[in-house]
Length: 153
Image (cartoon, rainbow, N blue to C red):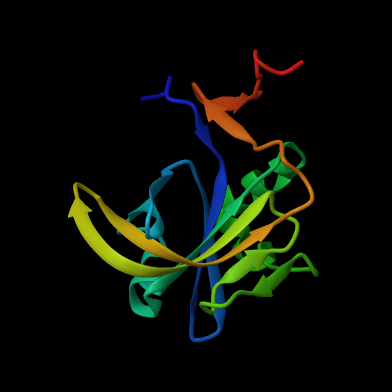
């Protein structure tokens, strides 16, 4: 599984106005009609209950310059610092959206499944925000990876 290359995202949710989030690679496009994504969240994660209760989540696609956010959202002792500053707004579905993300999606849960230790949430995309950058941050084999496009000129 470590060899699968994946985009790095911040998955977000809210519980009574309190924002929650985690760094993840367990997110994928589901289908184009209706526009939807699927994300896997460990049921023991602090984010699970806010997503389940609020029936919504945010997907914030990170860029190469956002490596610091991965560290911040992966450190449980720094939860209080995650949404500090002016980089965040509350999206259409009531979830935190990173304003300078490569792409940010606000999603309403349309289906969910339990498998092993995780819940798979299928979210119907309610809002899309495209940011200024286009170089998505990737993760492969336990470290950041560079996106190379052999077809570009």
